[in-house]
Length: 397
Picture 1: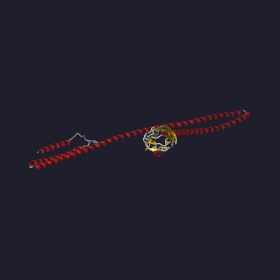
Picture 2 (picture 1 turned 45 degrees about the horizontal axis):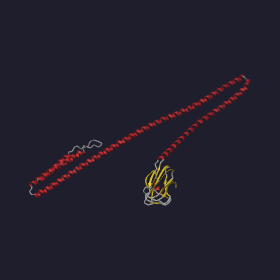
Picture 3 (picture 1 turned 90 degrees about the horizontal axis):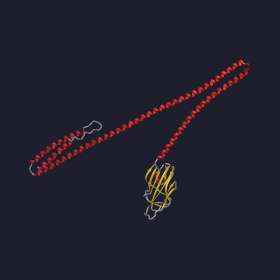
Picture 4 (picture 1 turned 60 degrees about the horizontal axis):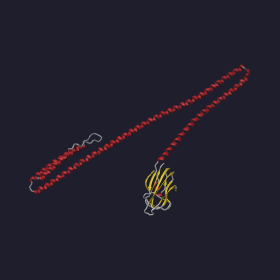
């Protein structure tokens, strides 16, 4: 009977915990980019009603079983029913655990939806900011375009004014010449009147008149020639100025392109650090092949360098070259520029033991043109260890 009371206490306590869990109201309703929804509360209420109905039904069944146990006689039947009742309690606990897991999954899904809503909101704000920036840039470009059109109209107006000034100057020159012609005509008239008054000087005056007319004709031709030459000179000057301006612009563009190309080439980075991949026994006059590239930048023919051991310059400039050799043999190696050495280094084994290694380093700066080669060559047979045997090439300028 005590076990029955204990089981009843457990069931009652579990029902109270479940009731408290389902009636918990501290969890706020989730809102994702719109009005507040009560989906979680509706699920709580539905689950709560179902569990209350199950709890009432199971409590009724439990009371019937307890009454049956109290009326039944025999310890064996009572123990069997107590075991059944314990199994029933475990079943109720499992149902309670499943309900808790289901509610936890729903809360996790709700949190995931909230996170996605925040991410979408942030991306929308970023897109809005980018659109405002593009709109501002378009307004600035439109303002600059209008300013350029205004300045172009002012330049055209000034050119038109200059052309008008040239025409006025030419008209003034012709007017002065016309005045001179008119003056000559008046003098000629005076001569004719004088010739009428003085018959003796008629022939002389007539000759002078003929000469004056010839001069006038010559002056007319001269005036026309001057006008033609003036027009030709003006056209020639205009053409020459336009051609010179175009040449200057063309040279300036070429200079700018060359300058940009030189700046671009000088700013390109070239760097290579590579080591031997394994120990090797070299012969005399052998080229070392550093095939284990550690770091490289601005190099397109790295595969050929690994195969041949020759570094081919792709960008002209000033380079710094460093070579470190680790060997237990005595010998000489050199850094060669286009197969001609620029610096040599000496490896020496003082102990005379093959287990004693010695590290030698050669460093040199050299100006390389495109297609120039750099290599490391041994003058005599050397046994070179891969560890600490490396080569570094850096473009300084």
